[in-house]
Length: 250
Image 1 (tube, rainbow, N blue to C red):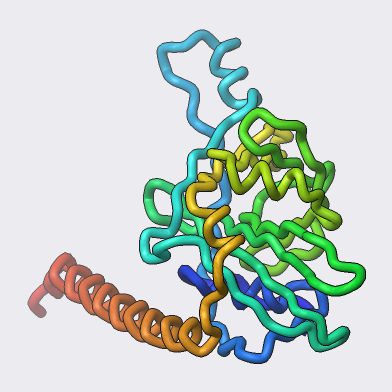
Image 2 (image 1 turned 120 degrees about the vertical axis):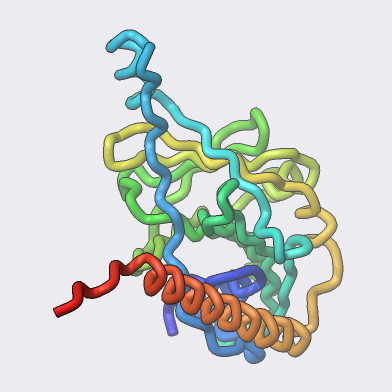
C-alpha cells in the first residue's frame, strides 16, 4: 500500500504514516478503522460593527489556528520497524492534533531512516479545502521557514512532506515551543496552524513503543469509539422520535 487512510483517533496516525509514501511496510501495523474527515479551516467572520475595509482584511489577511494535542493521546508516539525494501530500521515520531471543539485537524510525523544513506523526513496529514500550490512551509517558533510540498490527497485529507530534513531543524523542534505550519485556503488566505511541540524531543530520543502494545491499544480504543458512536446514534433517534409531531386523527 502506497498511502494509508486517515486515522480516526490517536496513535492511529502512527500506522497511517508508516505506510505513507516511503515504501515502508512496518510489520506490526494493524488494520485501520474508517477515518473521520479532518476539519477544514474556515475564515473567521468579520465583526458586524467593523468598517467594510477592516472586514475585508479579516477575511483575506493571515489567520492563525491554534490546535491542541488529541486528548486521548498521552504524548508523542515513537514507532520503529524495518523498511521492507532495504531492511534498514525506520523510526517515526508522531502525534494527532485537534481543534478546541475536538475535531481532528492535522497530524505530524518525523521519520528517522537509518542506514548508509539515512535521512530525515517530516510529513503532515492536512485537512481538505487548502490550495495544493504553493504547497506548505513551516517554522519552529521564529526560525527560518522550511518549504514542503503536497504528495497525494484522499477524500479525507492530504499528505504534505519535506524530505531531506536537516538535523538543525529537528534539533530546533526538540527544544522549540511551537511548530507553525502555513498553507493557503481556497480564498488564497494564509492559514497557519500553531502546533505545540511539548514532549516531541523526549519521544524522538526515547525508546519506541512496542508495536504489539500499540496494536492492542488501538483495538481497545476502536471498541470504545464504536460504543460511543452507537450510544450517540440511539440518543439522536430518541430525540427525533420525541420531537416528531403526532399524526392527526382520521
